[in-house]
Image 1 (tube, rainbow, N blue to C red):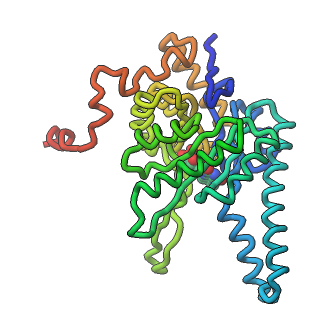
Image 2 (cartoon, rainbow, N blue to C red):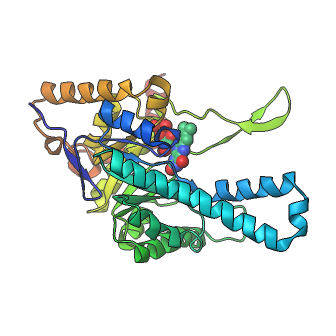
Image 3 (cartoon, rainbow, N blue to C red):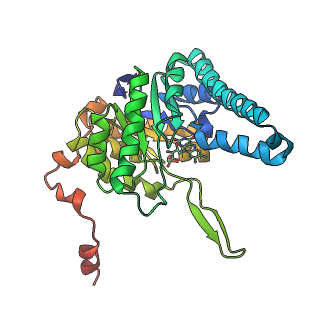
Length: 329
Ligand SMILES: Cc1cc2nc3c(=O)[nH]c(=O)nc-3n(C[C@H](O)[C@H](O)[C@H](O)COP(=O)(O)O)c2cc1C
């Protein structure tokens, strides 16, 4: 009987499937259902800086009287912020009591000041690890790329000073040198990296000529965005655990990520679209693959097709379609 056990951020996982931070992990009941279906860990829905600010903003817009009394404004701002935070901390605390699988807390942050003190509270609430979901959208043409990267490192290193639990960073793929960025995150205390987050992206409605939101869920083809970077980062940045994310819709996708060198796979869209039963199907598929190749443990094949382990690593560097088109003549 094959074993699907793996480790991620120093945590023992019964299999590589982690449910990604999202509405899927926003209540104890939902998380308990995911554990029952076979999930090995969950990342609780992020505490969003933006979310709290918006909550406060709407309240003031709706009742202009509130704006006339600065003390009331301060009180309400603090009250709302504390309650959002309290609610999130309570979710982590209650989830830890209700389930046996590791519970990873998540903070969405774009600054290295306000959020840092919250990190310790998540640790005190019992979180097994903390995932920093960082995505800063630069709009200032004078801001140098190094300053943007430094922001990520500052957030991480300040959070690391606050907590003892392992910290991972969930990033997008918009970096000039992802391997170097992963290496710097490791040097600043990250135990793991999530490659990659999928963001809320804009679209344009041509009927109304308005900016709208694009498709929220990923598709299976998105898997390939992460594959190259998992193969490279796992080869060049030792001792940094990798969780693949984006486009993991079936067991083949999980297996491909593991072969490229990840420790775990984060699922979101597939579970939203098909329900927690998808976890069972994916686990069955991983077992089937392992049986076919006589692999007894994940370690038997993890990283087998990473950059450093394949005879022609240039396959990972190839980025142009020239050869493809010349063969189509
Ligand atoms: C509805 C929805 C809500 C999400 N909320 C969060 C969140 O709170 N924090 C976060 O880090 N990522 C969030 N994400 C991103 C997912 O965790 C995941 O990284 C992304 O969807 C890519 O994985 P997938 O291809 O399996 O969907 C959300 C995604 C969706 C679709």
